[in-house]
Image (cartoon, rainbow, N blue to C red; front, side, top):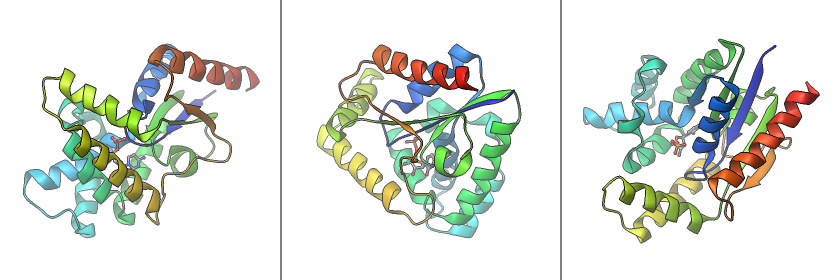
Amino acid sequence: MTFIIAIDGPAASGKGTLARRLAEHFNLPHLDTGLTYRAVGHALMQVGLPLDDEELAAEVAANLDLGALDKTVLSAHDIGEAASKVAVMSKVRAVLVEAQRKFAASGSGAVLDGRDIATVVCPNADIKLFVTASTSVRAHRRFDEIVNKGGVADMGEISADIQRRDERDSARADSPLRQAPDAHLIDTSKMDIETAFRTALALVEQAKAAK
Ligand code: C5P
């Protein structure tokens, strides 16, 4: 019996932490699909190539090794911006979605988080969660994350970056950020991570019991 947990939501909503915690709890493999788009943006940036060449970006995507995604490097705030630029390209999405589906189908289940997991990558997931939080809460979280790692951050800039990325991710034609009609909404604006985790866990347990 396979069990797929699909988690979507905007930048810094807490979906990644929830996905990791759920994967640990249920001993399932976890794929942060944002890292796949980040890896494409990062690879292009590193060699000084443009972020608006669809053929080139799709070629980079096709050569990506999902097992070698370096979260420490790829999590950098500015790589998120590059990722959202290559993520509007259908050819890039087609390649990455195929790899993500392979990951989801490779074992007895998986946890995937991103923007289009419940709507496109795994529309038949056993449980779908849409994790969100207000823009200001998300900007504060991203700010704290950067500062806690010893970095320097500007609250106004971060807030603007998050809004721009939300706008690009929601407005694109191919697989925009949307809550699937059958996804459960978890608004973490007023929740600490433990409360968010317990809320998500209860929903997943319910879906497991019903299967
Ligand atoms: O989740 P994260 O912030 O790492 O994602 C970086 C960018 O990758 C997002 O802003 C979005 O443009 C893109 N992305 C996507 N589809 C996914 C995951 C991420 O378009 N499933």
